[in-house]
Length: 240
Image 1 (cartoon, one colour):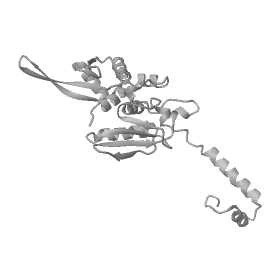
Image 2: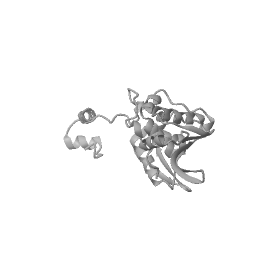
Image 3: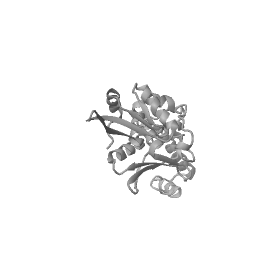
């Protein structure tokens, strides 16, 4: 009766019992329900008593790099919002981004259409817990370091980490080389980023997988050897 919104006074009259007894029964029943149906554990793994790691480490590593490449975290709002901008040309990437947000923390994800891109966003007080790299200013103008709890997570999932990096600030292209008047074509991966810290994270992940790389320019990395491209294909997959 109380769950239906009936006032205590009317419940007491209907049962013919003192108000104190009804109140005692009511709150006793609520306590019993909490024991039989305990609340769900905190969705944020960092806020649980044991301060653990994300439940889906592969999705987390992928989402971390989408954030480092094309996202930002607004903490000045009443509820922090994580936004990642994906070009309209890559609808598959938009879907992957949304699935990663839901797997990591989000209960609801919004798609906000912009000029030429979609802002995939989710509101939660706990996004800052999972992305300690957020801060004022542009990412390439401030240090970007992995937290102590992030490092082993990324080291255990270098493939997913690289997948997020390539899907945000990288590409797989067909390179054309002309030798002795004959044209040769071969695939290679390119990754560019103005942040030297993020570039070093990419280099470290490639080294973990034994994939050779070289710097084409100050802010651009290339993976071109046939066997290295084939190995990276196993981890990155198509961007569509």
